Length: 213
Image (tube, rainbow, N blue to C red; front, side, top):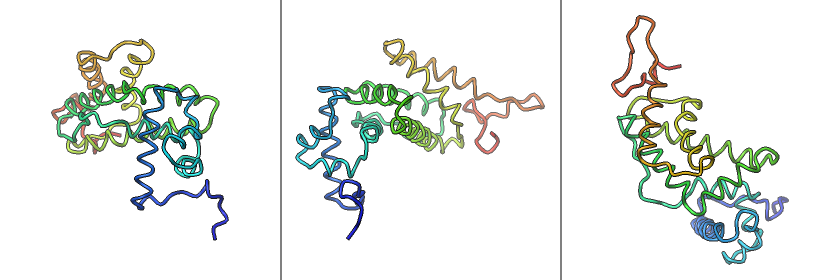
């Protein structure tokens, strides 16, 4: 018999019943968050609404920051998730539009704000924030594989940063025109010139991944 407390035992991901339970909890959390806010999304309330025990919720998410990060990363399917492709501009534009729409979803927006607000003084939230950014950075690079391009963490921040600032600091809409301008500017930051004066670019405005440090 395991000596680990039941609420600390991690569920088996390959178990279909466990996956259904997890999906149910995520769905209920997504419905509750706009209604009660991050502070009101207690495990007791979530368990009651989802028809599970609090121990079950804890086994999936050992803290609320982990739950909120999954709410962000597993946002609702809005039907516009980008596809990998050979054209960097097209992929980056589709990526930002998908991110914008996802962040405007009723459950995602408060989750992002809550995790960010807590990150300075809550290690769990700080870790969750790092996980979110690293996950999205890796996913974006996966989208760019057909183009033979791989962007650094700093280059990725230069891409998504203006959209986040527009949504959360300017409190304004990141329109399609705004995103087009962001991508156009971002592409210029990737134009690294060769020492001999040539640009060495791949036709999409960026140096191929194998040539970029």
